[in-house]
Length: 265
Image (tube, rainbow, N blue to C red):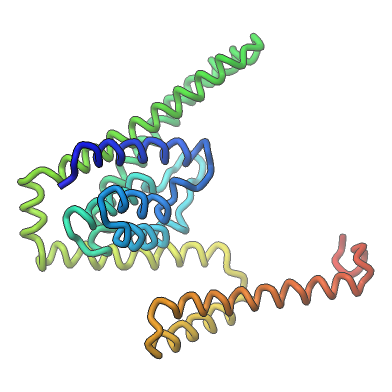
């Protein structure tokens, strides 16, 4: 169960994360941050970290395009953590169960942006009157509105989960085909998210390094190193990046360091 103080803390964290996503821009809203924070509030930081990391992979390739918003990572990540800790779902099932609440967050963003687009004329008027305080008030209004919408979506989710009827229903699904489907969907989404990111960012000349890292991770994992294998692979990646950087710096310096023919600048 979630106590009153825990509920208030979760809502405060959600409110802050909502503002951070579009205003503070300190990446506090990222699932890898919110997961452990909410997990700590609920008394299980390990599960929060596992869910946050998995959700981060799921949405890592998602990005808004114009006015189109992806399912919201703030509400989705927080609710996935609540599902995993309170309802006892495994990480994959928690990811799948959180999608409807991520959609509520998406609708909240769209609603806020739509409303604020109508208030831009008011901002122009305040600017014409040399009244920055009026523009500041509009920004505070937008931040408060989005924070309240996110907190409201999270509140609905938490209340539904802590309802005895809903809680008993979720417990009855343990081992059911529905839970199996949620686990399968949640397991796929993290790979889809990472694949989207690779499709956008990965250059053709980097595929060799990618497959080498994948093979190295598999070999070290099979050797019984488990989690530390990823750290070792990361160190190898850092070493390759530093070597490549130093080589390119040396080549540039050999050309006089002033650009020209060597780099086209």
